[in-house]
Amino acid sequence: MDASYWSKRYRNKETRWDLGEVSAPLVEIFKEIEKDSEILIPGCGNAYEAEFLFNSGYKNVCVIDVAKEPLEAFKKRNPSFPNHQIILGDFFDHSGAYDFIIEQTFFCAIDPSLRSNYVQKMYQLLKKDGKLMGVLFDREFEQGPPFGGGKEEYKNLFSAVFSKVEIQDSLQSIQPRSGAEVTIRCVK
Image 1 (tube, helix red, strand yellow):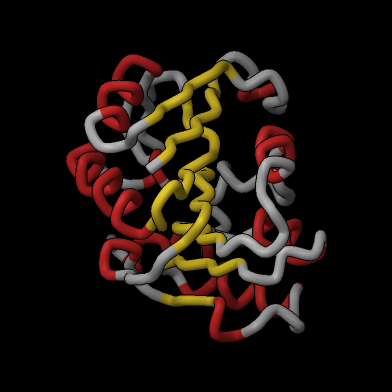
Image 2: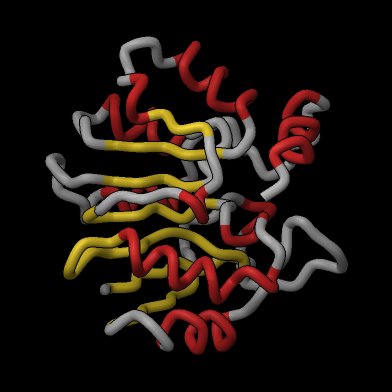
């Protein structure tokens, strides 16, 4: 992961993926998570998802990103969020054990050649019966990032490792992404 590339994107406000809030499909997914669960949000960016969860009573939320700028902005917005749960670093070097990992724009930001490594790392970081849940694009892009993909590709990729994979069309996507997102639920 190229930290300087992502830092530059944040400094230059080249963050079209950033909604400025948690996405509606994730709010629905969060309803499935118990409050005392250990949660990781990799490639968290401005971490609106972590902010939403933390303010909703979820206290075991960790975020990780290679770019310091969004993490600093997150900390400024959320001064009571525990510092030890904000990690500046490469997801692929991270260690830990989580009940849930939340996917939102991280998968589409990494080079497609790393997708198998991504799936393996997600599996490694989850506890027994842990779940990877989130939102993926269901469309192709001419060049990336973001890098797109489709349901069949995702099913094959995640099913190679996870015991149960569920992929559904997202019904709560914002208008510009309507019909172009799917939700995923993968069980270790």
